[in-house]
Length: 66
Image (cartoon, rainbow, N blue to C red; front, side, top):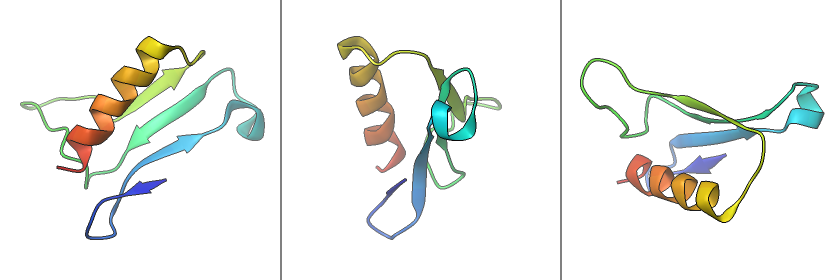
């Protein structure tokens, strides 16, 4: 999990092997600042971690903790 400056958890990771699922999950709590209109994503499935996905995750985390 990753917390913001106030100590609120804003994102978390669920490992595929640990939870015996097909893919890992990167999720965001209601404390994350990802709101965009009336609907937005709060979790993402990860099958593979490449440089492109790593950059997208970094951008989401930066936005979540602002």
